[in-house]
Image (tube, rainbow, N blue to C red):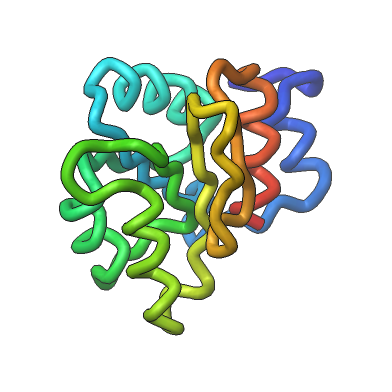
Length: 139
């Protein structure tokens, strides 16, 4: 249970739009590093989010276009095979996906982002920044 001082309580008091049944929005984590996916899942689940995992952009395409699409995609910019940037290019061409915000994550200090990304988070980042953005983008 979250106390009144936790971020979840703050956003609930601020009128966060809970989904039917009182569940929190779903976040799809797309990252080729399994340890990163699992660590982020733990943090977001502890915050009350439903979380799904995808090891790459190709696999994420099925999740994003499925009947139960996520409310937010947390996307690593650099992955083998199809990169996060290429997934954003693919999403940009599909207007039906415009309602799914993407939080792009990168360790590249020179990376300038992508016009389809709702926000850019640079590694290493503060978990409070991640949680703040997740709550803001899931509204």
